[in-house]
Length: 279
Length: 264
Image (tube, rainbow over the protein chains, first blue to last red):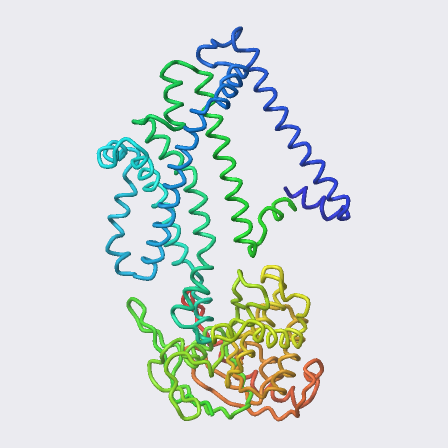
């Protein structure tokens, strides 16, 4: 690290940029080499080295994927999971932010409910799934609610902490120039808590998918979790891997979108990406 | 115009009472530039916190134009030691914030903000965020954010404290220029006696805690002052030496306390 800083100071900016570019190209090359190596070992090791029954093979996974992509039932499963996830995430995030904001402003309510929220949050939410099935049935609703409970606590807690951690000096500035409580909330508390809230939104995104998939595992007749479950219970290793890849891709796309939103919403912050690059 | 009448402030710690300031009385004329100097931990900031209305005094009253001050008022502006710009607002949005709070339309408040930004030499940085600006630039923005809504009194708590020596002198010079134009009443706190004499019409010297007023000196040097050169003048030296003897005694008397116990 220190050497890199020295390098930057010695080289003029053009040279420093070239060094950085070359370094990044090496990282990318290494990543591509790793994935190609992994797939090669998997493909050619499957059979001679490992039992294909347990590990499948890349070509086998690709065949399942191609078959699935032309199968309308796969797209229906994706749609079901996507809908459940979106609903669960939106409900959880909106209620979490709303209650976080409310409790941040209404101190006594927050203090009264604090131990109960801690208790509920300590509960492994996945264990609620059977109860949710009894309450909300075997269709979408139970999966949506499970995802909602997971997302809710993360966004609630980060929103509450975010608003409580707003620099009191900034609140004083607003008070001194004559801002009323509503203005202080709108111009200082909310933007001051934004980084925390967005962090909560980002962290809870994978949990929305976890909630939905676990719900589908338990009991369902459609969805990616259902499809994964039916592949694995019929000992179709390639199919299982294919579904894992689909979920991974789905999550990476959503994370990338969230990252774009974060960079836009928090553009006033010191740009961590460039800071780290510079060193 | 602004009167502090027998102000005291006590803080209650777990097992003892801390007297921060005691019996502070001073009358300040409209347009006067008063500097307060004292050893660290003497309750300088406590005085401004009380005058600003952020903190009630334990005893005594603050009167602005013969009316007691209860709570914050737009008549009294407060420039803190930290610039306290909102990191999510651009420079111009920070400077115009007091006008936005007052409900002024965007184009109008931006016009007013631009005027001050130009005056403070910050033109070209309107759309920059605070983390992209230097400490001196942020502190200038902090000052013009207070000037923009034209409070009658401006409280300044070591506003140039965290800055390097050259930036300090240059900002002192700019502050004097602004003050001579607007004639706003200023109470300016510093631990730097050079700064106190260079800027002020009167210099108030505080004792160690509990902060009491030990002496008040009139600075008779003519205005406008050349803040870059004035330290060489005989008049400056004489006053400096007279106050320094007293300040030195206070600093030497001061008991060494753990850092968190000495916050003022």
